[in-house]
Length: 235
Image (cartoon, rainbow, N blue to C red; front, side, top):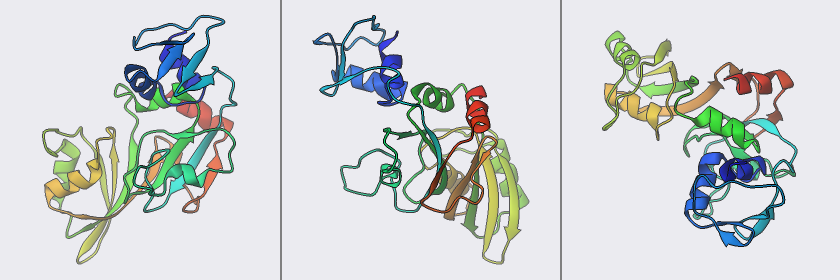
């Protein structure tokens, strides 16, 4: 089995992150440091990651939907001692990691799992999974601005793919807008609205594909149903 897949199936991290561990010299096979991306693990090999032995398929696969609150970072640890999404699932014995990211000031749906293959599939650029956000923005979101967002805007050296945009409510000084995007660039939705002249005041992710946040309370999580897991794998 390819080394990065072996690490992912042990529930350590995604395959992409496993490649980083390998490149940084944090992985050994039978006592030898491995930095080759395509290295294979054979039956009987002893694999050590960050000084700890691992074994693929030893952990039960767990899948949860979490409603991330404000002020949490979407990482397993933080060098600034900020709260992380890992602090919200401490009662789950398996080590879960987030699928993708939400920025510090964005709330809403995030999937957490120890299934590295699923994480790889859902975050790979070739898979066009729409993420749905509801944004409260300052000012008026005119038809011209909606058209620009739908076409794609330059957010600083990157032109976004066409988005699905719907103005849910226009107030005198603000608007509530639903926007669906396929990419996941850093602070992308905020930058998209800024590009057309609207500052985001609040931002919540309410769906990933057909998987919806629903009435899940802020800071709480629920385990995904079998049907939801199968749906995500089908993507």
